[in-house]
Structure formats: structure tokens, C-alpha cells
Length: 108
Image 1: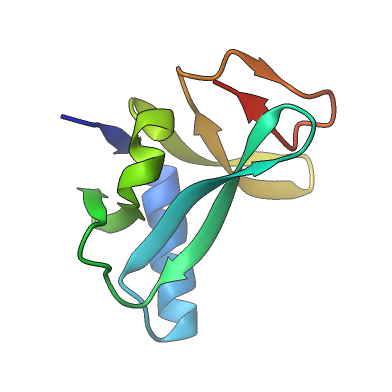
Image 2: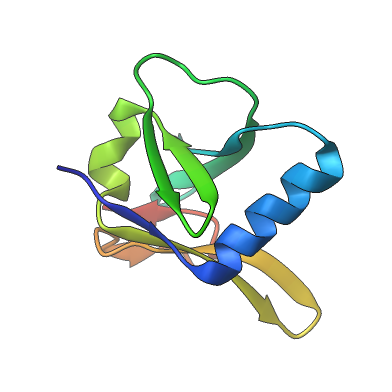
């Protein structure tokens, strides 16, 4: 069975942006071929649920993942971090073997 962990910080941010939007069930995470290394993460709001999506819930927030992305995301942790003036979702993905120099894409 696939796993995906959501940190308390990520859950708080997901709930916050959904509250600001006034709608949404959670965060939708997928991957797409991209960049110089292979894949990149794609984030979107989940306003509805596709029948084949897998829902992960922790700390009162939900993340939805399509089955074709499960193998790449399995065992990952979704975090929300602050680095200087930047705030962003970070994926701590144990399946990543290499990342490109710009940090936009990764290889599994």
C-alpha cells in the first residue's frame, strides 16, 4: 500500500489556502515529464475527486494523488517550509535519485 505523509506545517497551509479560496477538498499532487532530469511536481486544488485518485489525510488536510503518480510519490513527505523570504511546499521523496541544478526537475 502506498504512503504519503503530510507534515503539520503543510496541513496548516493547505487548510489556510482552502479557507481563503472558500472552496476545495484538498491539494492535488501529480508529476509530469519535465525539465532536464525527468519529472516535476504539479500542484493544484482538488475541488472534486476523480474516481481513481487516492486520498491521503493527515492533520485535518487531504492530498489527492492519481494512480500513475503513486509509484513516483510513494513514501514521500509533503512539507511547507520557509527559507528566507520564500515559502513553498517541499517534497521529501525517497525515490528521487538525482535533481537538476536548477531544482525544477528530478529523476527516479
